[in-house]
Length: 417
Image (tube, rainbow, N blue to C red; front, side, top):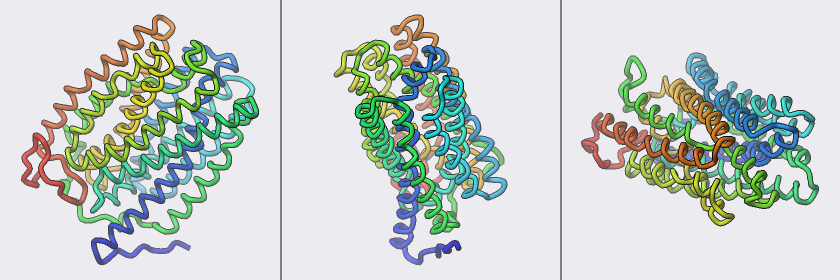
């Protein structure tokens, strides 16, 4: 039986309730990422072992990411129309968590590709309603901190998962057992999720009255912002292609491949917390600086020695931290609560479409010239910077959900919209 969550009387009680909710969903994300990101570190070499080429690896990753983002618009709209945020979230997590350990059972790359795409589709189903529920906790905590904290816990799981898989592969010498052991965090994901649902059946009770005017449609600033993030998505190398390159080039020993992903996830965990706090102080400027700082991961990953590869993976992880924390925090401040799941889904659909097209292009470029791939990824990310600057100009103020954080660079600073 669900235990109703009473609206807290005092500010500190409200903050404590909101923080508990964020931590619970963060722990769900931690176990979830321990599962699917643990698998992600070896899916590229595993597909290669089953006979897939570099183009197939890149295409499978790109199609998976495309569906993992494009379907979010459908499920975000469904959640907003029906109000079934918790049921849709649970079904999505269940599909995703079952698909990962099932990879241990396949013997041909098409079957493995199907499970990889299925796992991404489950992720598409659960993310918009989960993020919409999470946004209710931003009152009094700050959108940057809420999404940054959840992403930090998420990234902690994404760091631990590849280490578990790496140890399994090293000791037992096979990718299949690496997938099989991930059944444990998969089940823990579902157990904690059900506990969170029981404790917080009505997450909107955590929120305060909205200060975002409700427009008839999605605001113009949202589309400008999406344009900039589409450039970043198209430029971003998916880890299976990077792992395929490491295995093919011999840049790092095979046992290091999942460890490098863990390094990136450690950078993501630390970066998400720092970027979240920074976002609550300087707003969208955080996205500009994060993109500029991480745009050069490509030369290090694909052209460097072992030391530079590690540095490149750190930069890559920081870029992922920005995409999964402050990028979501910015959308939270653009759209009101009753359309927020739809907005997250629409944003992710555009982001995922660009990711898929970019992944295919990167796979083709890798076969032609690694230098062309590097130029492509760097130049597209740099091209996003003026678009983000235009986004800041289109926002008279950069709202922080539920509280004022003072003046932001380039904004009016009078607390109005």
